[in-house]
Length: 429
Ligand SMILES: *Cc1c(COP(=O)(O)O)cnc(C)c1O
Image 1 (spheres, protein in one colour):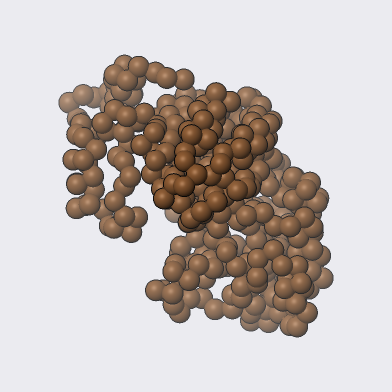
Image 2 (tube, helix red, strand yellow; image 1 turned 90 degrees about the vertical axis):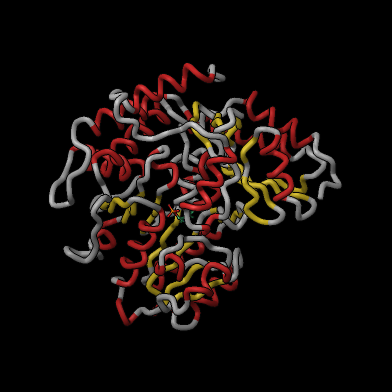
């Protein structure tokens, strides 16, 4: 997996820019120099970057000083095929060299084939349809609009869970629970009510009064940003029963959990999570394009699929041929290389081994979406030490370190991080 530094860099440069007289993007400079330029050019919404990265290959990335990191975060559950995957790179390049963008006044074979592929993977019944977007936020925004079309003003209530994360646009933010994200931007689109997490009685209570005025219930099958938190067994089945009884839509946000991340194409397809339910809407993005920005809303069945009618939603980029081929190529590689089975199997042993570290109290998750719960609120310190040791991980809560590595991660690579974590002192601060 390790590749000699300079030859790879040279190869990538010539692929990016065969016309050497037109230098499109400079890459020379140290991490410190680039970080300084970053802080003067980019808004401070993310804070200063931890490192400035210049290239990737497989499960590794390199920073501008030449340091190598094992990428156990995968661009936050995005780079399912790792970095610079040759099949994905070739598919995107070929499509861009053939037909890169057309407006949605026109169709393209890749867009159509991609939508058909998603419907097939979803096991969606006849009459189901897809709306293609550029991100998870946009997929959820579309789902919110679709939910409004379910009953309109007769159904003003929209339910989401405490701890939920659905995105940062005004609509998706209205569905997102975290006060620090919401409060600076209030008032947000109305009608959203938050139900206590994982509480079946609270869910029943939310439908017990005015249940027929609920347009939709939004759920992550496994809450990602909140610390890789699973719902209790049977919860999705109960959600399906209550929404069906009251004519509300069950909308599953699989932006983080979908497209193979949990060892199944969709987390709700895992029997112990979904129990065989069929949702009304599933949203996906993150890993969908293997690193290329693309998202989708899948609407199950004729009635849900026609709630957004002609002219009621739109997008300029959504469904463009390059994004669509990125999705098709990513799916094709996952299938060809048997990566769902690999993610399920290695994910299980990886989690077991992580749990042996003294600093770890519990390991949650499915497949390659892993939440490492620590015995103390030292997740940020663990992530900082990991980075210095050459591992990219994410402290998604003060006590939780999240991993979402590429699907092609090997047992040996996983083992290097286990050894690192086991070697950390228990009294880390
Ligand atoms: C990341 C995420 C989103 C937002 O997706 P973007 O592509 O960042 O817009 C929405 N929902 C969930 C569950 C996510 O993890």
